Amino acid sequence: MQLTKTLEFKPKNIKYYKTAFTHRSMNLKDSKGNTINYERLEFLGDAMLSAVIASHLYLEVPSGDEGYLTKMRSKIVSREHLNELGKDLNLIDLVESKIPQGQFGDNIHGNIFEALIGAIFLDKGYKFCEKFIYKRVIIPYVDIETLEGKVISYKSLLIEWCQKEKKTFGYNVYEDTGNDEVRHFSVKLSIDEKIVAKARATSKKKAEEKASKRAFFAFQNKISKMI
Image 1 (tube, helix red, strand yellow):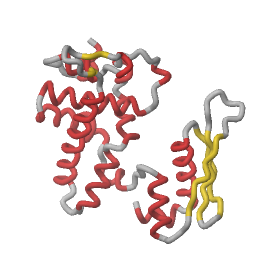
Image 2 (cartoon, rainbow, N blue to C red):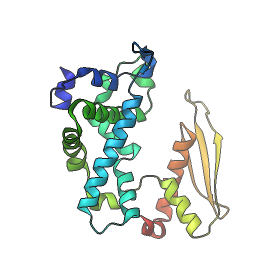
Image 3 (cartoon, rainbow, N blue to C red):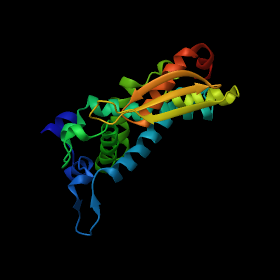
Image 4 (cartoon, rainbow, N blue to C red):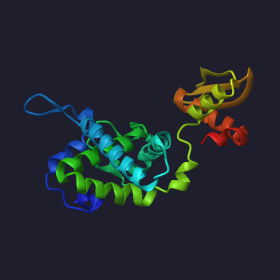
């Protein structure tokens, strides 16, 4: 069974895992009319991940204050990181959906990973779930020194720096589809009324993040002190 091979353990109650891999497009309901899909398990898995990661950081970094621990936990459970975990496990291949895989956004990988964590918790209990998180997340991916220098959001970091240094900034975003079949957006990032970076992507958010990343490297020596 593909699920057992992916998990490397045998589930006790398969229904939790079926729910974890059911997309809302299936429009399934139980006998009481409640919707059946991965989203509630995603909520539960998110809480489990946060709790286990928080405990690990608390014990691993006794010198870290609340702000440090919060920032480090955010880096570990960032959407980008969770998407990587979901992709590494090829969880998308287990999803039941009426929507083709190619139409899913990247976040589906992280969402399903969180739902899987929720299913494991309900099926096997806290201690087993904790061991799974250690084996699949903490041991292979959590390196404190590396994470200390990892940027979650270049846009957030850039805005924080601008505010701290009392610099004015602005993102001028406009639609720029051109000859592309897929809708595109361009952005011009200005700091102190001077354009410092430009970028183009398939969403406003991605375009702003890409421009922010380019601006970050332009001001890296000044901004990196904040990471």
